[in-house]
Every structure is written in structure tokens, then in C-alpha cells.
Image 1 (cartoon, helix red, strand yellow):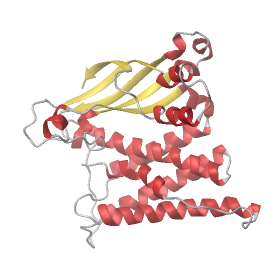
Image 2 (spheres, rainbow, N blue to C red; image 1 turned 45 degrees about the horizontal axis):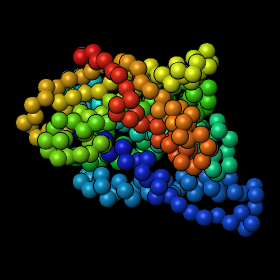
Image 3 (cartoon, rainbow, N blue to C red; image 1 turned 60 degrees about the horizontal axis):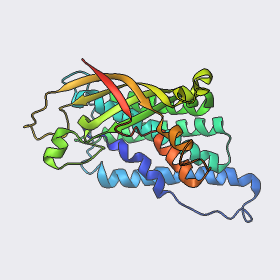
Image 4 (cartoon, rainbow, N blue to C red; image 1 turned 180 degrees about the vertical axis):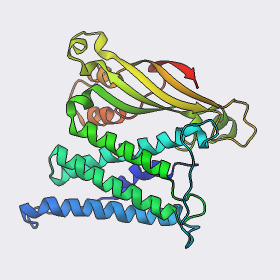
Length: 286
């Protein structure tokens, strides 16, 4: 099943506004911006959901159990990791929004977690009244797991320096054959990684070579969506492990030495995206 939540991070770009601090009392700015952020996100999600997700709504609530990571589950569980990663990413982006509103880092993470959880549950309830989706307990669980991971790493900066959760994507065989290049729906081209960075370990960070290394473990499926039923690739569910290059740190130490907006944007993207070709992964087929 397609991960509809994967587009939620894009909704943050729809929430824009201007505020004149000279008009709003200083004590009201935080509440004003927070309220506007939450209401804007809720309205944007509702509008997008009504237009894209809930067109076949009915009066009967339906629960749909999709399974987890079994071979016969939808996409071998890659869609479940897609749910978790989408809400992990959304929570971290929303944390930045609450920091902009004036909250400290931990409070921002808590507010982002509560807002994301309410959004997840609300959307899933609405899905329960549709024929296509239905209410999925597995989706809710993975959404909340992603939210929890986002809140946890935002709340503990030292651990955030040590760990990253990233998505690596390379178009699958079926995606190329069908000319269906969609990183969101091409589950067979996705690999989700938990990365441990040497820069987060003081003794390794001091070494001018080892500081660029990372240890990665992850999960990915092959031979699932997208397919028209004639795909030649056998279904696989793989656990991955290996090493990767800390591309963000490498760029910071070479061509992005100045603390510019380009460096900040690059670092932000590379915290969540694993660039193909920067990993040496081995797989264990389940």
C-alpha cells in the first residue's frame, strides 16, 4: 500500500506567514507563532487529505490489519518503515518550527511529538472511513515509533551527534522497466539505515581518517512495489550491515568550511538522506 504519509514533510512548506513583532506583544509572540504553526499544519493536512486520500469515504469505520515484515505482507514491511521514517522526519522538521516560535530545544521536541502524534491518529481515524485504506494499527504503531525516535534524538543532542536515521534510494529494476521513478512509492528501491557516526565518538573523532567512517545497519525489500505482476526480480527481505562515508563531515572539512547557508542546508539534507555510492553494504536475506 502506498505510504500516503510520505508527503507530510512537504506540507510544512505550505505553511508560510509574516509576523510584525512591533505589533504583537513580546510575551504573545511565542503563543501566536505556535498556534499559527499548529493550525496551519492541521488545515494543510486536512485540505490535502480531503483532496487526495478521503475521496471514497463512507459512514462505516473499517479496521485493516496489514501485517508487519512478513514475506506476504504489503511490500515486505518496507511501507511500514516508510511510515516511521516519514513521521520521524516530520517531527524533526516541526521541532525546528517550534524553535522558531521561541521554545527551547526540549520543549520544541515535545510539542512536535504531541502535534505529530495527534496528526497521525487523526489522519488514521479518517482513513478508517475509506474503502482504500482503512484504520491500520500497524501504521499507527510505526508512526508513533518514528515520532518517538525524532523526539528522543532532538532531546539529546549528544546522541543526535552519534546516530542518524537515513533513507537510501536507488530506482528498482521494475521502476526502470515501467518508467515509474517515484522514490516514495518505489519500495523496492528503498533502504532504511540506522547509522552510527565516528564523529560522535571522541576517540575516533580525533583521528583525521577514522572520523569520516560510519557503521550502518538497515532493512530493505526487493521485488515488491512497483510491479505490474510481471516483474522478474524475486521477492527479497534483506537486513543490511556495513560501513559508509560521513559525507556531511567530509564536505564540511573540505569545500564547505565556511558556515554558510549552503553548508547548513547540505548538512540538514545529509542527516536524513544516504547518497548512493557512499556505502559498502552486505546483506542477509531473511
